[in-house]
Length: 476
Image (tube, rainbow, N blue to C red; front, side, top):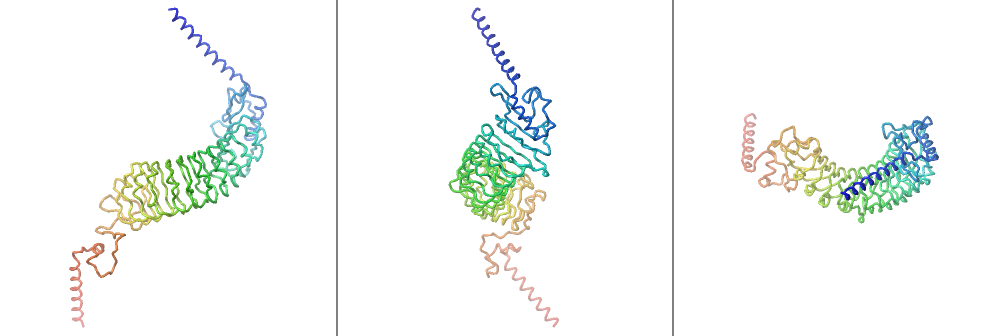
């Protein structure tokens, strides 16, 4: 009994100590003040973006107290509150809206513990455009890890070269703004970056070779700009890269050199550029690829020469309008995870392999605008499942069998095969007028006669000719 009593007493003491410690920690956070200089700098910085009407009078006891500002995050350092994140713009329902005339006040760079700085839909006035200040960013080099400017059409000018001082930066997102000029070379100094997104601006010039030094990059998105020139060789060595988007630019040359090593890449999107030189082996070595989108590039090449079996993770494959030739390889039917296959507007020939219909997850197949021939051999069930997501129009020598399906499920834009007509084999050596009709049974059949009825045909022609001669003699 005594031992049990001692154990109970010990447990109660531990519980009381734990409650006291938690209470002390809570009281410490509750009572922790914000450094006066920090608070003044924050208020002035916010007023620069939302207007001088705001004075923080509704905050108690300060921005990190019981009534915090939406978009402002704090942390205790040395017993005092400091700002660690600042998000300006309508991120939340009760966020502060930006003014028409905004300014970057110097007090912004006095927030010495700031880790994250974001602006969303803040600089929207084209009548009052604003540029990102070119100096003072080095004052935040000891803390800043993330900069984001999203959806700011009134944000113009170039990326400040002083961004290159922010060595702790892990994320740089400049998305859908009005920024121009070239991508600064010293962005390559930000070796801790794991996300670089510059999409939807008006950047021009070449992609800097220095980006090949960003070995920790997971996401590289330079899409929807006017970048030109060749792809830097160093980008092929970014082994950590997961998503790589260069779509909608003016880039040219070969996609990747032989030494490209992007083993972890899951998305490669280079649509709407001027890449050429065919589909090369480095792409087929990207075994983790789930989305491969190469459409609208003059790549060229023979699709039959590639070993598609190495890309078993593919979910989306878009090779439309890239100048491919050859026949559609049956090996594509081995990509069991494939959901979208786009092969439209190429120079593909032959008959589409029926095994494509066996892909268990396929819900979109586009073969339109090629030189495909013969009879489509997919089932009516397949056409019914795909609907308008099956495209085979603009293949003049392609048809579907009339008797095997209802008109409702007929493939859109494909003509029905004529009843009783056998299509010419595209590989046949038959020639018209070679003087050997009996040997050209498939040609005779295509005219509507059987090969066994040829002699009867000539007899009818002779009888018809004789009657015509007799009638002429009677009237002359």
